[in-house]
Image 1 (tube, helix red, strand yellow):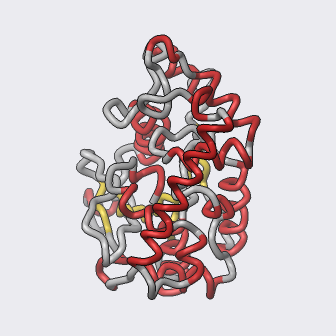
Image 2: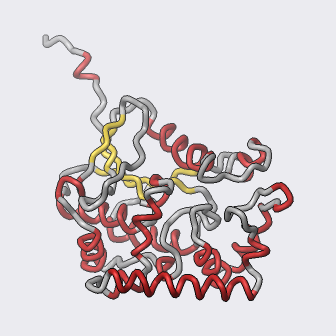
Amino acid sequence: MKRRTNMDNAKPIRHILLLSGGKDSTALSVYMKNNHPEINMEYVFCDTHKELPETYEFLNKVESYLGKPIVRLSSKRGERGFDHWLAVYRNYLPSPQVRWCTRKLKIEPFEVYIGDDSVRLYIAIRGDENRQGYISTKPNITPVYPFKDAKISKRDVFKILEESGIGMPNYYSWRTRSGCYFCFFQRRIEWVGLLKNHPDLFEKAKGYEKPELDYTWSQREGLDELSKPQRIQQIIEQDAKRMAQETARNQHSTLVEIFSGQFDIDRDNQDGCLVCNL
């Protein structure tokens, strides 16, 4: 009789692709499905319950294309969603300096989900980028960069999404990133976009602020001030000037790149929470 070894009892390596609801991770999911169907991929989305409605609609569309369910990890265990952790942090809003939201609502639920299993984590960093994605300190996670290896560029990503029929998330018409509707990395013109497209969510975001304590989403300016008509017009004019300058520098860009505001996505993401908005 053959003697069983520890290798016989070893669990198979899990292959996981984290979806953010953004263009790059979605394009990677399409790419892996079409080019590596032999891989039993798990598609995972960390749901903060503070996402835009467009994000959930887009994920349903992606799920239909992939032909398998997207595992939706929830940070909302009982009362342990964003509001729970906000209370734990004594109502101190997350910020670029203190990103507790990413840790508590995205990374920790994911690390609980995988446990101690050996995981190959597929990250949608493109070949034309110089940045790193979510890298866990857990030794059982090995990052994989298919787009870097294949030298897939931003233009290629647009082509993948267009040819798949999935297209771009609708929020790209006024926003440059996926993530929570109150993401503190939003530019001011994106807050104006939130006010226009989802006034109810804008009011909810404003309700979290405490300007008297300098607890505001947008540095040096609360949403109450930002939403005043005169300020909105100023923001719109400033953004129009910026877009004109970007268009002049990118004369060979496609229409989808121009109208989806993609010029700022990569630059913003270098400072953003990559696990949220790839």
